[in-house]
Image (cartoon, rainbow, N blue to C red; front, side, top):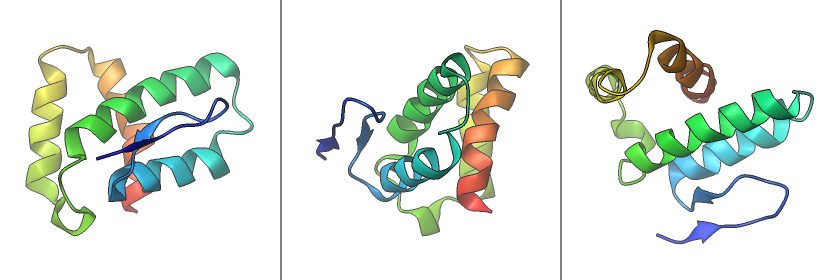
Length: 92
C-alpha cells in the first residue's frame, strides 16, 4: 500500500480509509488552529494504520469496539474522545 504525500497535507495510506481521511481534512480542517490540526492529524494516522487493510463496508460496531479497546490500553479517555472526533464524521 503506497502512501500519498504532500508537504501541506497529512500523509495517509492510499486505501479507502486513507482517502476518506484525506478528504475530511481537506474540507474540515482548514479553519482549525495549527495545534488542533496537528492533534487531529496524529489521531487520523493512528486510525489509518489500524484500519488500512479493512474495507469501509467491513468496519462495523465490533471493529470499532476492538479499536477502542486497542486505544484504551495506551491512551486516556480524552485522547480516545479526540480520536472519535476524527473517526465519527467519516462514518456518518
